[in-house]
View 1 (cartoon, helix red, strand yellow):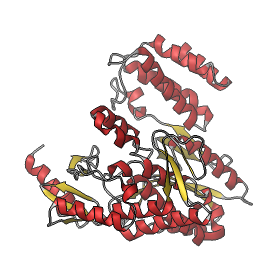
View 2 (cartoon, helix red, strand yellow; view 1 turned 180 degrees about the vertical axis):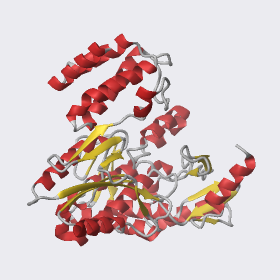
View 3 (cartoon, rainbow, N blue to C red; view 1 turned 90 degrees about the horizontal axis):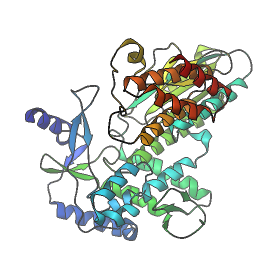
Length: 453
């Protein structure tokens, strides 16, 4: 990239951005201030301070869809409090594995790295489901859609069902700090009102619990007040270097920190809780799902007025600075989390179908438009490649509630694999192995697809 273009991108993204402030004093003074603040809050033992830690150097990379825009990257693996900060997230397994490979000296840090984010995710997942729209994973999509269909089917009279999709813009970089802290206070106060004063987190593997856990190895107890204080400390002291200067973030979730995803989701859950409290009985007429910044809204109403009320309430429920951009065309067929959502006026009202990024090019072009995954001649064993094919079939089975679409999905996957130089016999063998353990629809599908080839 042209050095001048990259420098202008760094200046506009960080230095000249009103969400960041240039720090005039030295990095050593900043580190001393952060450590003293942790001691004043009484969480110096929880922080697990690393005396050799430093602030990361931020950079930008062009966005794939628009090369004129840039994505900010703020590494935080060198920071003094990273030992504790990374412990709060289950979403950082790839980073943790990479860190283990980098240096044996990082092993003690990695063992305790995800504690805090695990705790925040655990608090979020244990909120009442009727309070928010948060999805834990894409694999929960079909089950949640079936739940919404069942609830809407109990409404009396004839109703029109409509579906909408949205994208929350500026979710991470334009959130005021006071709004973030208010949401964190809300979720911790809720669990403390239920009699929970702490949460136990497995620092080496999966798992978190409120009560006593089986076995004491690798489990650590976190007081909820300490979790709240640590989040406040991280938000108030987010620093990194960019273009040779030290910057402090004053708006948005902490960039590069493992707590950012759960904090952003907690903020959205708090806004959705306020929305459900405001609408009251009108909540019966709609269902909504959200994974990070993608939102799906399903409304069943008799009149346009109710639909407009719910639509406007959802559009305005988030804090100022977040923009809810509609991404569907109003036809009732839309894309959401890599699946196609279809709406109809009879039960089941909403169904989903797993999509492929190469759906358009599989049948119309000789070469695939998007070269994702591996080809058959790439490095790796046949056992690994057959496992990848099995996972793709499992994804189709799990994310397709419109069962009549499964044969077309499997046939499209077969054609895509053949264009990646996979032998037909190899692909069909994996298909037969997968279909033999499924129901009659899958067995007939595999027989049709393999015989057709």
